[in-house]
Length: 146
Length: 277
Image (tube, rainbow over all chains, first blue to last red; front, side, top):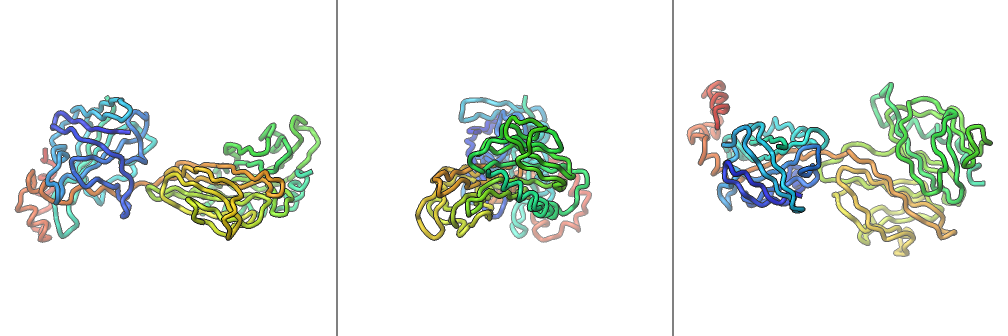
């Protein structure tokens, strides 16, 4: 299982922990935006198929702004490293960085377990509207194995 | 001869009577879809071969064996069971003609002992509907010559008073449970305990079979995977500081908060959004 996410281009080097599903049905995230969740029911790095999904809060009332706020500065072709607890190291290259309205998030592609091997890193993006439930968008980084 | 009883039951139309139920659950009749049929041999004692329309479907089929799903085009089948090795033209110990197999259904046909110890044949329709994210499905089937039982997980009854050939099922959080089977309403363990790994997105079907009187009660397990659902979304921020710190001008956040987005003009917003680094 993934244990660390390293994105040197935007100075991200954070721990990864397995997460599941929150009571409201969404992907469960860890409270600290500096610790990233790996959707443990989905694909694992190097499994050869499906999307490895990592997710974290972009910020938090308690902890402030987290490292994933810098993901939007990534450019296509930037390198992403995922270390796993078994010592393996998997390198990915950024394909896309997108702001997607939460209501339009392509859930089945994001969490796909059978298709092309990909890495998806998801956090929040877009404007923040406290009265409308927080961030309007998800920021989604899609990367493919190098 | 136990298999003769099965023959009698198939001949009596029990199989054909039960199978249309499977068709009904796959609401849209998938005209050309294959049916997925697994067979569990849960009658202690007799090793057999099974033929469908003259072709060997199963050979040297031993008690306690669960077949992988066989894809059968929908239609009508002549089933014949012979003693193992007797060949396609061997004497039939079971024969059932014109058995209807509807398309699209996922079925397990179980040859097992009834509560009274006489062999019977029960076709079950497997629930292959999608699960919610993070959930597993547990199905239990009482196919043993034994009285009513409770199925317990971690010592607590989760299915109560199950009698042969009933089934019960529930969608539960994925994980490993310590399961056992007790006589209904008691703590007298009949089978187990056994660790059952209920994997996410999988229907784990546990069969209790054998005979209490002959002290050969056992469990058989079938799994049907690929039923997983996905989370409904990804939250992603609880503070709002990142929005204010980075690329979104405070005036736009304020306007959005006031519900004044339409006044700005959709074009401006769209261009602004795309130009974000």
